[in-house]
Image 1 (cartoon, helix red, strand yellow):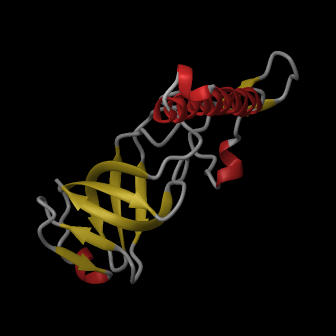
Image 2 (cartoon, helix red, strand yellow):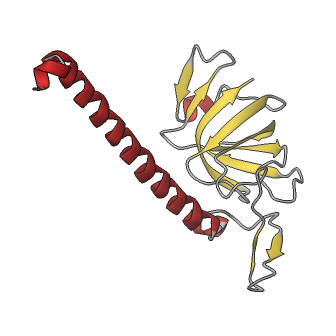
Image 3 (tube, one colour):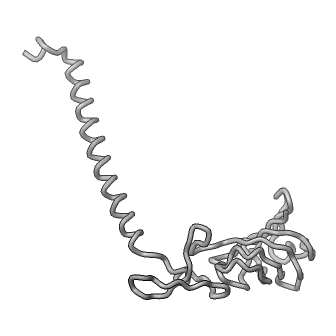
Length: 170
């Protein structure tokens, strides 16, 4: 009877199409609900920068209208975690550099002197990143007045001294 209406090959293709549609719909609705739950859990809580190792220098506190609790400012331009900053070198010392930062790693946005401490793992790159130096040998390449980008080994938000992971000259 089945062969009368559908050839065997057409029947199998039809079954495969129906199974594909059922699995696609199932995956869509399960994925949608999971994404909705994740969004709702993130929406209800705001990450405190201090929980991620941020410093307190230049922080702006805001008061939650519902709970009355004060916390550090978090916005699209001031996230909880900041890993790099840029500025002009003002001093080169034995194991650290002092630079005048642009202020982007501080909530109040004011420029400050920041100290980047070199470790044995700090990597310094030249302007086009074709050459790099490790540890204090990279420190010898830096001179006052140079503009650099410094990546910290952790969260540098609100910190005026931190360990440098990488230095990029530009």
